[in-house]
Image 1 (cartoon, one colour):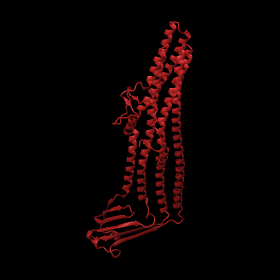
Image 2: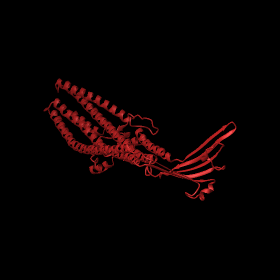
Image 3: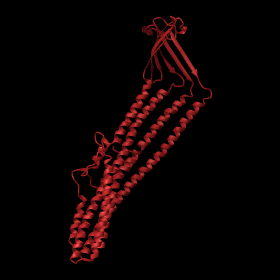
Image 4: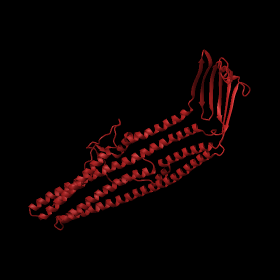
Length: 461
């Protein structure tokens, strides 16, 4: 039975079988994923959302130019001809600057609209001294837009982190199915070779006919498992291809000759739990909640302003020429002045709105505390999972080695006529099953690193 040792040597050599120059390494795949996957592109578009939202809010402070013409002619009588043009300039300080030019005439013109024939210039400002002095709708919208812009950067990071862990898991599942397929292909070759040897020995009268049945049954079983493994590898390849996109934004199909890197134990793959625990405080999920709280705080401050009375002061210099502004006296002559004051008596609407704003903040803060606890718990679970998998990989690799030694010993006993083909097959099945289990543990350990980083709120960085 010398062929058993030959086949065993071929089996051991299969651990490096099939590695070619067209290997797609994990680092290359992840880099390509980050650069060209649609979700990565969508993450960049998130920044555009923030920029456009901020631009929209800033538009509330754009200067406004207006013009108004109102004329009435009836039975050859000029009732009135009123012309007004002006500019309004809102400022971030809450003060509204304005300038107007007014030119009116007519037989039935309201006396208060009477101005010099050359027209009248006015320049001044309007300011809220009560409600809106500290914060108004315009400034609140701008601050909330600034907060939203900052949150889009965090949302971008969150989307990329999700893409990172999904891609990492898809790659190592692909590598796992490839390694399992390679192992089972070698198992089929080994069993086929053994079956042919048993048939030859039976024909020579060295073994019983039942041994050929045993060998053939084992061959059929492994061929069946190989077909399943090939189906799983095909599905994993198709799933991985869904993550590959070209620079021009078109989906790519993974070449059939492309294979993953070796699925082998990487003892240099370690985690730093303390470092990950420091990252959790800046987790994107928590940062997004913090930005929501900041936006709600702006809304609370705005609602608090509604408890103040509305006091609006307006003042304008009046001159006939633009040069007159340099000599215009303040509150002496040629000016318009106005003061508006009003306030509700019971403040029920204002107090209700403020109370609702505070309740929203309390609710969101409680949600944040719960989210922080969930994230810390998830991180600890992932750290423990990595540690457990590392131990399992070490233990099971020793188990595979021990099972291999038992198989070698059983083959030698069978060669000497002290064992049966049934026992050899049983030992061999244990070796192959344990190798497949070890492959699964190695793949899970690699994915566990990505999941732990994702739980800590980091990904591609």
